[in-house]
Image 1 (cartoon, rainbow, N blue to C red):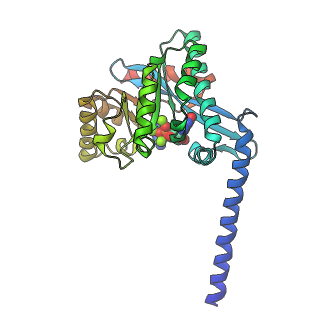
Image 2 (cartoon, protein in one colour):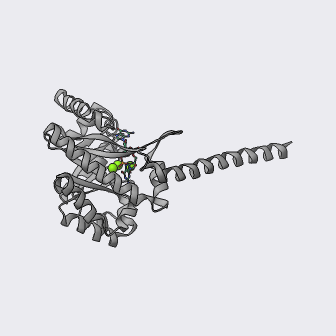
Image 3 (cartoon, rainbow, N blue to C red):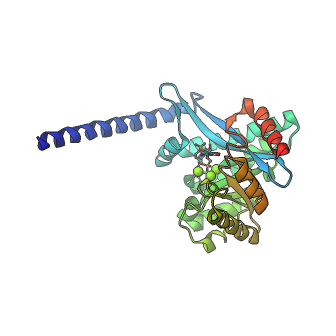
Length: 284
Ligand code: C2E
Ligand code: MG
Ligand code: MG
Ligand code: MG
């Protein structure tokens, strides 16, 4: 009897595995034409400046609306794109679209808004990237200092020599650079701080407990002190409550981003999203 049950379970896992593989292969195939079909779009999340008490920028986040499967998480489809060369096509589309849309938005609303965009580790391999970004900036009229590119700790540490060369080149054009998801990697802090960077985003797993636990607060406080000591601006991500925002403000955090301040939204809703975040800051 046990044998039959065992076999049944094996068959069940087999079906599950096959279904997952099938979905993967199907999505990977569809992703190839997603850009050309207009299925990819960017959501923008407000980032507040905690010294000025207002929105100072936005982060552009990729979205894929699949015609059959609906919203696919970027964590799923970006790693898919990274496994093929597709990431270069998708990455440069996202970057130039973010630059273009934010430039247009700034002109329309007369706002001095900065834009943060995410770079994949694979894009560091592309020696043509800095020039391509520069060209997109020129075409849009956005100044380089209004653009900040985010790289995760693991992306920076994957090949520090290549990363350093790329960061220096991007900086030569005046583009700002940030470490994303800080604290989730296992990189050497000393090595990380040697890179030419402008800001550090503390991963939301560290922000989660700061209103409940003194240890969590102390940890964030020490990350912040260390970052400030080497002149990096600090951004807290994943701020979900007023209490967390209050702690961050008291600790001297520079910028904050999270569902409490505003969720990522399509460009059509950005003016309203910024307005809500600004009002939230005035009530505080
Ligand atoms: P990320 O760059 O660290 O982006 C922050 C993620 O946290 C976003 O997830 C955002 O929607 C989410 N988030 C923001 N505030 C909160 C909050 O208060 N609570 C919680 N629980 N989550 C919050 P999303 O949009 O699903 O993106 C996931 C990741 O996909 C990004 O993490 C980034 O690494 C990657 N990604 C997104 N767009 C791009 C892109 O254009 N290029 C590349 N290479 N990667 C991208
Ligand atoms: Mg990011
Ligand atoms: Mg992040
Ligand atoms: Mg992340």
